[in-house]
Each structure stands twice: as C-alpha cells, then as structure tokens.
Image 1: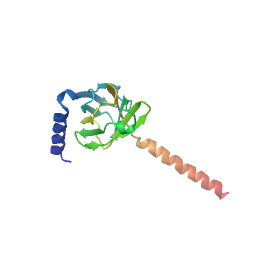
Image 2: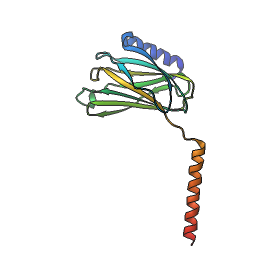
Image 3: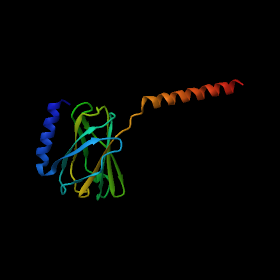
Image 4: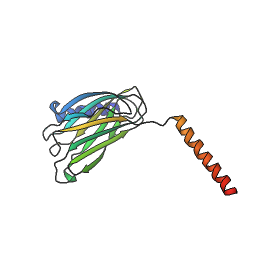
Length: 171
C-alpha cells in the first residue's frame, strides 16, 4: 500500500473513531530488555485508535504484546485488532495473533525488517471495546540477534562432533 493510501486510511480511521478515542504515546528507544508496560485507557464500548512512537536500539525485529481483561461470553465477542506500522522499512498493516485464555486476551505481533535508530509509529486499532477491560497493557521488546561469532562457534562445535563420530565409527 502506498504511503499516500496509508495516510488517507489513517486520517479516515481517525475521523471515524473521533479524536477522543485516539491517543499518541512515545515509547522511546526499545531494547532487548523491553519497555516498561504502558497502561492505555480504552473508550467505553467505542472503537479505539492509539499510536506509539518508538525506535530500536539494536536488531531488526521488535515484538509487541497487548493484554486486556475480556468480559465477552466467547471468542466470537472479541473485537477485531489491527497493527499498522509507518516510518520506513517494514511498514504495513498486520493482523496480529490473538489468544484468549479465561478472562484475558493477549494480542501480539512481531515486526521484522526494521532498522536500528530509525523512528517508527505503530498504530493499534480495534473495532470496539465493549467486551474489553477499561484499559490494555502494551509492552515492546527488540528481539535478540545472534552474534556472528556465536554462530561460528556453534558450527565449529557441530563440525567437531561430526569428526569425533566419524572417528568413533571408523574403529
């Protein structure tokens, strides 16, 4: 989707949800240790549209997790969630993974192909919040990238094990 279409979609969604249901938050730099959980208030039964600004300290992937209480009777009562990323590589709209466990709903998404140091904006929207709690908790963490030296050690160790096995079977 072109950037112009994404901008038009965001403006239209903002107009439909009303400015009272839209909020902007700054997460700041996100590292492997993760960000502190951020409590975000939900409107009473209305659609929601929240944006979060962040940058990666390292790596090229970040995992977002959203958790809220769920008061619906079944999974059919879950609202539709959407994650939309703008700001460079990896931009796009994602349908996150949704897990329902008893009275909690967890929504998660891994965003890949990002660049460390670049600023991104993640927009989380939901079709309605009537069956959700009064707020949701959002947490972000950069995914650790294996170091090249660690991969070299792993491959070297596997090679030595293969050589030892070959010598053992040769006796």
